[in-house]
Figure 1 (tube, one colour):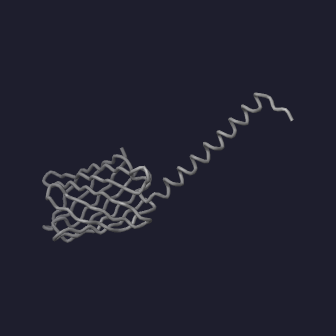
Figure 2 (cartoon, helix red, strand yellow):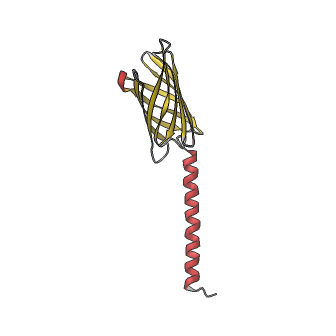
Figure 3 (cartoon, one colour):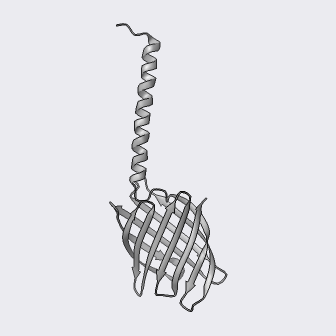
Length: 166
């Protein structure tokens, strides 16, 4: 059987297309299997903070998430401020399956500690603790919308934020 040059070229193009499709599907499935899928990027929005004295204030927030190439490490910074209150939260989190652990800090109060919890399906649930402080934090991401909820028994009793990806 004799193949023409154009026939070989056509087969090479088809083979390249099949290989590209396989590589893209493998990349997509890896990205979807990452517990931090959908978090990467810059976000901004508004919310409320409830303080221990019973007052509630509106806050403006900006968040930045960086997911490493393997999809197993997340660095987060969350900066929020109202007219009289602010916090600057940073974390560095590593995943092992759906379990996550890492470190966090709040710069304006010089507080730092550990966190542990679960991540997957666009949601992170963690318990954060430091000397004299503990809180539960939940992040839910759906498309370009994210909600952040923090609850504690400290000065900050609750935070509810809605962010949109920039």
